[in-house]
Amino acid sequence: MTTPIAGEGGVDAYAKLAELGLTLPSVVAPIASYVPAVQSGNYVYVSGQLPMVDGKLPQTGKVGAEVSVEEATELAKICALNALAAIDALVGLGRLVKIVKVSGFVASAAGFTGQPAVVNGASNLFGEVLGEQGRHARSAVGVAELPLGAPVEVEVIAEVA
Image (cartoon, rainbow, N blue to C red):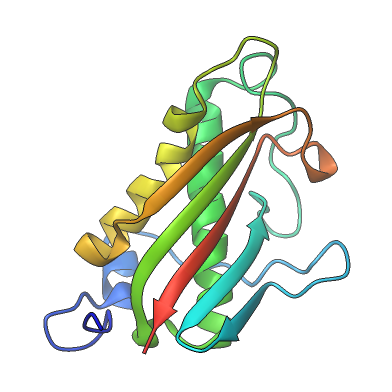
């Protein structure tokens, strides 16, 4: 098992968030019948996180049409912060060992193929905050629609101590 984030040799995620000028938001309330995150064994499975800010989507639409790649990349960062908040609320970031897998879903206009660039917003945030323990396997998928008209959604699997 890898060293927990706040453990010896690990990164203090809370300090790194503060250094980056970021704060964990409140956990986004589910919009249907599910919980934000669940632990099974040494893994936390985080439900798909929309880029909610204070309970609202800052932007809707399809990437490659109403939403630019740059805007969507920033929205993916918000999704990643929301995922970290869900992990923190369930087990605490101090127990986080590694982000294992990130799945990014991008509401894509016809012909848009830049999904990996959009999901880099989430991946880069995990790397900035967690260092090597934020590096992960990943999927970046284009979809026709996302809940509430969101441009991007991110789900996460994390290992915890």
